[in-house]
Length: 317
Image (cartoon, rainbow, N blue to C red; front, side, top):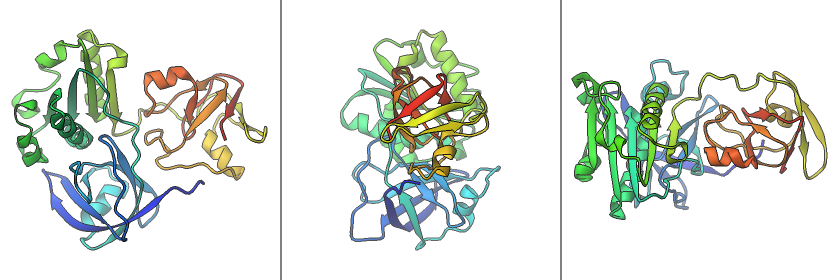
């Protein structure tokens, strides 16, 4: 596996941030400052027991430390439960450098739609837009008032923020915000769980939004199988060596078994760590990272989950 940049940090604060959420503040554990990042970026957090979890950076733009907000998942496989129950102030963590495959798009008007902890990347985007005095609105969907996170920062954004509580009958299922009825010259940026994202996309398309106006990041990949499909070959451009990817293998698995260095992180098609150039052939995109425009270009592929529509893919490796 290709070695990526690792950052050593110390947990300097751990505090509640709305029901079920913990806000962690992470400071560099060395003399080197933490790398700058852009709105929408995330980091990989290495767990002591092995594995990684991806979290959006929600620090204010001028902060010298990183902040991430971790929601306790009832179905946690160890990541969020460990953060909530075992991680202590003063502990050290290893992170990846920030990676951004969910950048803030350029548009005359921007609508930000978040559900729950999906607020984390969009709050940073909202603050960046506010600093530029851009035209934007942030719509936040929650179940109850006690779930509200980042209340002070949201208050500072003033009338640019609208909070919807489903416990009070205000949800996408019951009513469509007026902002969503005006797609002209706008970008729609969204983050949240699958059900919310699907509902928002359906309503946006019904209101006349076009696919290239929609920008999103999901919490989890969809339920489509990531390896099932016909076998095909991948060719390494630098050497001409070819490998067969069987019906039940991923490209990443085959390349790693052959000793070819690739960078992997989530292995679910969500983080973008293993995006690789394609010089020939047609990818079968099954990721949650690439935009529709990037997919149409057919010049890159997410190795951990996507496959091929052509017999051979030539990879820029």
